[in-house]
Amino acid sequence: MGSNQTRRTSLVTGGTGGIGRAVAVRLAAGGDRVLITGRDQRRAAAVLDELRRVNPDAEHRFLSADLALLEETAGLAESVAEATDRLDAIVCCAGLFSTVTDYTTEGLERTLVLNYLSRYLLARRLLPLLQASPSGRLVLVANAGRYPDTIDLDDLQHRRGRPGLAVAGRTQFANDLLAVELAERAGPAGVQVTCVYPGIVRTEVFANARGPGPVVRAVAVMLNRLIGSSPESAAYTPAFLASAPETGDLGGRFYGPRLREIRIPDRVRRPDRRAALWAASEELVRDYLPVDPVTGDVARLLADRSPE
Image (cartoon, rainbow, N blue to C red; front, side, top):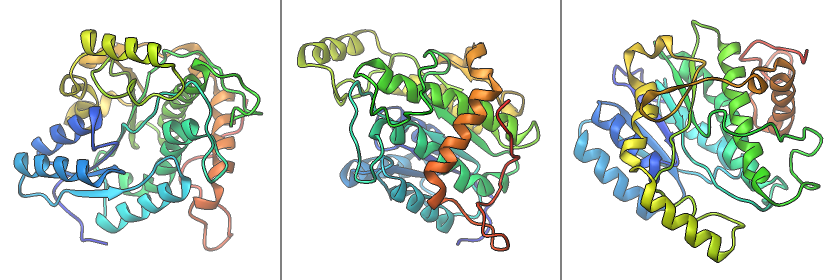
C-alpha cells in the first residue's frame, strides 16, 4: 500500500466511456488522481492519455474488473487498497440497461450485480478508505427516485419475474434505498452519500442494451442522440458532489442535472425496505466481506439496523 497522500484520489467505475469517462476527466482537471475501472484495455488507454493531458502530475491508473462478477468486484477493492491509503471519492457510473434476465457464472442476475450489488460490495469494502479522507464522498449515478418499488426480496435474481422494465428498474430502486440507508448509517459527520439522475445523455446505453428488439433499439438510440445532453454536461453534478468542498451539507440527498435537488420519495425512505435489502445484500456478498479476526463474523463497518 502506498503512503498517505496530500493529493485527492478518486475512483470512477465505468470510467472508460460515457458519463464515467467525463466524470474522470473533470476530477482529474480539478487536481485529483483518478483510478478508473472497466474491461476494455484499449478504451482505458485512451482515457488515461486524456487524464494525463489535463493533470500530468498525478499517477492515474486503470484497474480492470468485470463488475457483473462479485469475485472481480472484491478483487477491484483489493487493488484499490493497494493503490492508495485513502479515497476521497467513489463515483459509481458502471451500469447496464436490460429488459431481460441473464445469469453470470456465479449464478446471479447480471443486471442486479452490475447496477447495484457490486456498488454495495464496493461501499462495504472501501468504506475505511473513504473514512480516511477528511471528507469522503460516495456518489451513485442511477435514476434517483424515478422508479417504483419493484424489488421482490424473495426473488432478487428475478427468476420468477417477467421480462420488461422491472429487470433494470428494480436495480435502480435498489440504488435509491442504498443511498438513503448508507447516508443514515454513516451519519452527518461520516461519508457523504448522494444519488444522481444524470438525465438523458448521449451515451451507448441503448446501443448496448439487452432485450429491446432492433426497431425499439434503433428508435431509442436516435432519440437519445437527438435530445440527450453530452456526457461532459451530465458529468457536472456527480463530479461536483464528489469534489467540491461545500458538499458537506449535501449528503443524503438526490440530485438531477445541473445540481437540481430531487425530492426523495416516501417509498425510498421506508426503514423496513432499506434494512431488509441491506440484510439480503449482505447475505449475497458475505463471502467477499472482511471478517473480524476475533469473532470470525463479518466486520461491522457501519451501525446495524433491524427492519422495522
